[in-house]
Image (cartoon, rainbow, N blue to C red; front, side, top):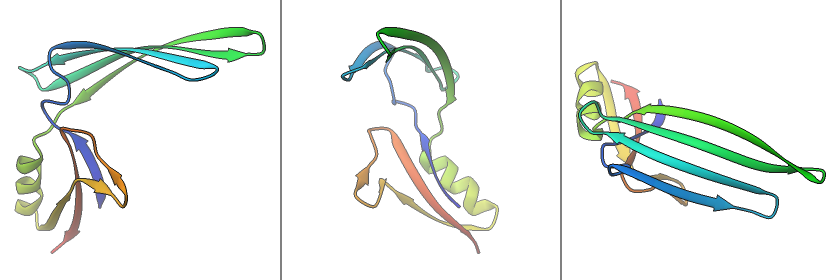
Length: 104
């Protein structure tokens, strides 16, 4: 298996961020529930279609995992595990960890 997860600390408290391109914009509000290790992202996305803009809204709720604990859990279930901080030349953002796991 090859996969990655977000860890606690991915976002601190509440935060807002904004990204834009020539014909799109994305406004995102982050809410970090540290007690339950949940990250909620509320996104409002605008994209140009013809001469007008379309608006979409999405909410993503993401469980955050401690990478070291997840690696230990995999090892306890007969996996050999290696953690990585990116795929090839792509480096992960802070508080994200990847795993390469094989059955022992």
